[in-house]
Image (cartoon, rainbow, N blue to C red; front, side):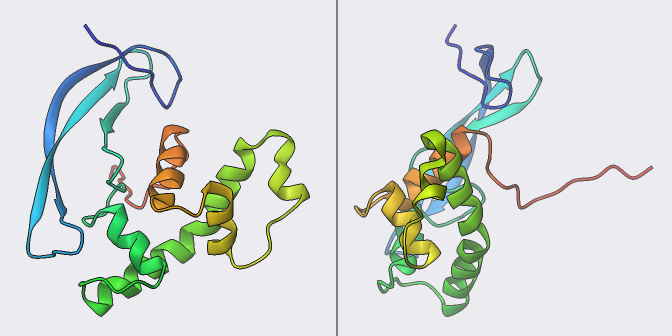
Length: 158
């Protein structure tokens, strides 16, 4: 049986307990979508359930990272203006957190000692690379470290 490392407790006792379908709207063709089969993993140590996402998917987003990245880079994408505004607001709200995660990953907090000039977006791109796919790289590094900010919440009444 294949086992995986748990991002929460770092043990190697995660096993596949099932799967679920996840639809993602195609990049640059919003009339089509692609369905991924996402494996569900459960850690036998901490009991948490994790979903194994492909590199092109950002947690809780319906569009691929490629489309969101294009909007952030001011490239024209065939999505509604309200979607573009939401993506930019989401990214502006999470950029400082992502920079903090990248800073914590570097030895001796090198980013803090010699900060990159420019906007938070420019600093983020300088730290993960200017090539296409920079958004996927930073998001998945954050997710793997179990530092992704949850945008959903749940509570128990009573």
